Structure formats: structure tokens, C-alpha cells
Image (cartoon, one colour):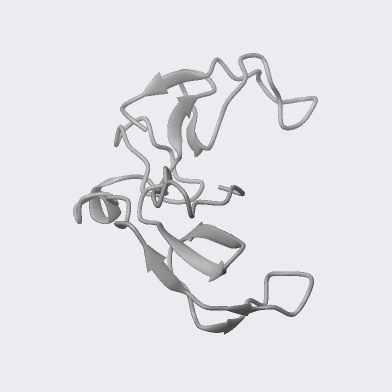
Length: 121
């Protein structure tokens, strides 16, 4: 993510593909529409020419069986959001997050995260 993918024509993020913005840049995106990208600060047209193959996404059962949003993920052992890992804060609480640092707290009064991984990313 955030790198020019034109030379490799591949993406590490599941479910994305390298799309050519113009002759100077390509980016890994889930999808692409020809024309301006409303997420960019400047108006620029995207060519949206696909380069290489789409990175394999998750199997269809993942959206049905794995944890979503703030749902406790330890009982399910997996996360529906691509790139997220199920981490335990304690034996009583778990959450899908992109990363975890042992001892971190979202609020000063919170229990520190153990960051024990549950299941696969």
C-alpha cells in the first residue's frame, strides 16, 4: 500500500489489484473507476488499466463465520476484515485489529493488551 506497483504488477493486500493511474503511477486498490479519484487532494484522472492478477481474497465463508467490527473474535478464532488479526486483551476480551503492541491501552483506565494472537491473520 502506498507504493507504485507498476513494475511488480502485484499487491500484498488480499482482494486488491494493481491499477495504472497514468504512465507514472500505479496503485493497489480493491476496484478502480476511470476518472478522478475523490480520495486524492488534487484532481487527477485515473486510467484504471489493470496490471497483473488480483491478490487472492478470503474464502466466501469468512464473511459468515468470522468476527466483524467490535465483535469479540476469540470465540470465532478469525476476523472478517482483510489484514486484521484477532488479539486478546485479556481472557475476557478480544478484538480484531490491524496490529497490537503488548501493554498498550486505548484509555488510561483500560486493562493493558496481552496481544495474544488467536487464529490466523
